[in-house]
Image 1: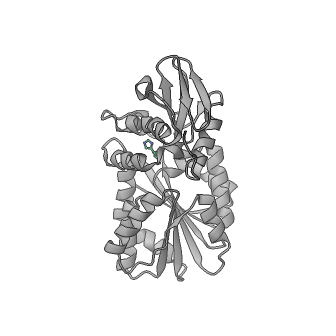
Image 2: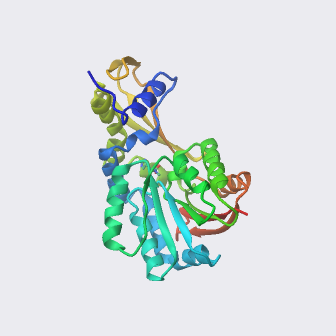
Image 3: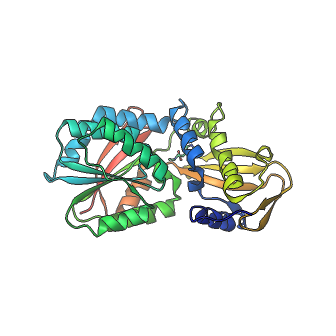
Length: 321
Ligand code: AVI
């Protein structure tokens, strides 16, 4: 008998809803258990996964230009990073800001308390003078807290290719929500992975080392462990594909045979036909028209683009008028 703790209730709810849909679908936040966090770290280190290095290059070469934009208003600010993760790249910016005696506080938020604890511990050693207050929250809750604070100037950061894990519709709702929490003059600094040679994108999500494959399959291992499911991991395969027209890199788990899976915690038996899919992730790649439209509909002004040397990736600064 599997006892549902609070922690497993959202997992069970997502699985119950997602595996009874047609076509089957599971939300990509399910990737990020302790094991998934660790595999994602390995993904970011592999040469095929370019977004991390592109953003790193932007921060390295343009950190002073970024700081100047952040401090242009001449008042202290609270830097709220949504989905901070391990914050390794952000640390480069934070260090520069601290070195330049910038008057700011850092508020990293993430749904994974595990990665936030690691981040906090590291920052206490590497940047002991930085005031940092981590919040383990879903984005919506973190935004609500900030929206109620009229005292501080806020700069939101949503880095990496994180916005890509929303569909275009969801991304618009997310940016609208963010813009709703911003006060006049607040800034938003957001990363966008751009459309590019489809072969480069395909390789990033279908790497020859099998790391992204194990990231995707780990989701089933998690369900076996947390929900008492009996997925046969060898009976599913990682199937990623990139559509250059929409910019959507989609990942699936494909059932290699006819099979039934029992999920003890949700009292479900889920049938899979051979070659039936579970859609597990979208990683949307943007072009400039898509980005401008996002900003316009959320009533945000584009202040400046920061691109890497190959123009694979951009961090874009938006302002609430
Ligand atoms: C976290 N996110 C931005 C990554 C991405 O590129 O969509 C997750 C990932 N999935 C497979 N590789 C990396």
